[in-house]
Length: 174
Image (cartoon, rainbow, N blue to C red; front, side):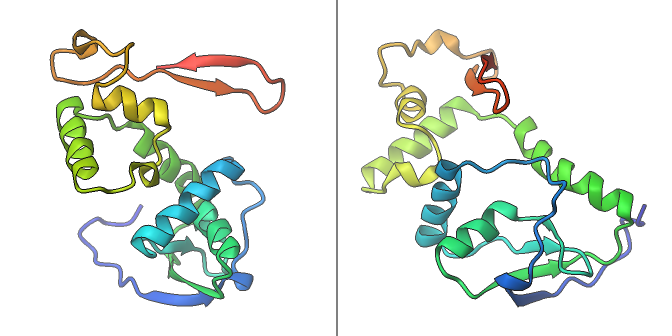
C-alpha cells in the first residue's frame, strides 16, 4: 500500500481511444441507456474525468466513458496512468471505484433545492441521470411523494428496481 503522504506525480495524457484496452474481467456493466446518459453528460459538460489506465493501456476505471467517447467518434481522451498499483490493487480498484460512490446518499432537502433551482434556470434535468419518475419524486411533485418518507437527517429512502441480466428476475434494492 502506498504511503498516503507520498505524492505520486499524476499526468493527464491524451491517448487514442483505439489504444485503450477494456478489461475483460470488469464486473461493471453499462447498458445502452446508461452509455447514452454518459454521452449526454459529455455533450453538456465536456470531458471532466480522465480514464484511469495501467501501464499497458488497460482501462482500470472509465469503461463507460470510453464507450461514450467511441459513440461520439472521439479519437482521443484524457488518461492518467497508475503504474504504482500492484495487480491485486488494480483488480480491487476496478471494483472499489464503482462501489464506493454507491455508498453515498442524498440530502433530500438540498437535492430538492438544487433540482428546483436548475429547473428554474431552464436547465434540462434529464442530463443529470435521474429517470423522470426519480426527478418527480425528488422534487416532491409526485402523487406518491410524502414528506414523511425522509428520515431524521432529511435522507430519502430510495428504492431501485434491478433486473438480473441472467435470469430476468426483478428485485428491489433500497
